[in-house]
Amino acid sequence: MLEDQNLEQTAEMDADQTNDPSPMRKVKLTVKVSEILNEAEGIHSFELVDPSGNDLPPFTAGAHVEVRLGEGMIRSYSLCSDPADRSRYQIAVLKEENGRGGSKAMHDDVKAGDVLTISAPINHFPLAGREARAHLLLAGGIGVTPMLAMIAELEAKGARWTMHYLTRNEERTAFRDRLAPYVATGKVHIHHDGGDPSRGPGLQALLSDFEVGTHLYYCGPTGFMSACVESVGAWPPHAVHREYFSAPAGLHSDEANSPFEIKIKSTGKTIPVPADRSIVDVLRSEGCDVETDCNEGYCGTCITRYLSGEPEHRDTVLSEKERKSYVMVCCGRAKGGVLELDL
Ligand code: FES
Image (cartoon, rainbow, N blue to C red):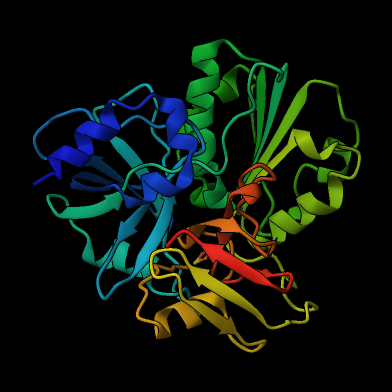
């Protein structure tokens, strides 16, 4: 059964409010898997609906939900359905044989008719606002999922957009039918790169010029993300938006840790965080339950509001604005002193 009170509260929210990440994570929804489709080799999509047939809470393009799987596993998946359609959410999952187990559980254990607990939609990858005159979307493999919701939202607004979609080969290209009308009109370009982004459309050439007013969005596997990072030098940071599915290579490798302290607001207790432990470790030893997924700063599950102190951010999720209020406690630290957490 749905947690009705939470759902009603969420459903009444304006869609823009779903961009405030912390409160949305606390809202738990129960959804039914109404359909599972094979979208490409190794990729299944899952349609999620309210078991009572009610509308689901609103979301904006680029949002994801956290899905609770067995044994405390939580995994984040981008919503790829049309944000204007409140009757369903759709997510798509690439099965990774050597992953951390979440995608295997989704493929092997979840069946149509099952009931899942998910978070309300959370958005760390929203489209730019009215200041954007055009949108350039770059998708690598399963990174196409948030782009599908973006396309629906951009089309509804009548915005100018183009997408380049890099996949290994035709068999690994998900959502071909859905994208076919946009391929026909030249808005979507599909490239098969055999898994090597350097054999794709030439990201350097594609991103060599920045046109004022254009915003860039990219999402995909590690190699694709690295190739994009190396190619966006001409673009101003405010016009570049990205979402990682895994930690970028070398993200934390050359950062030395220093000790600091955290203060827990609810108890007033101040606790040392030694150089060799994370904030999450220390919180858990104090009996404070903080949910995590990736433990590497890219999924957003452990987001925590802080009230004072100066965090040292080490994630790839938070925007500059969000960093003024939140810290990812799986990897974030403090620049010395005391970091007071709203826990
Ligand atoms: S657990 Fe993924 S960002 Fe902290």
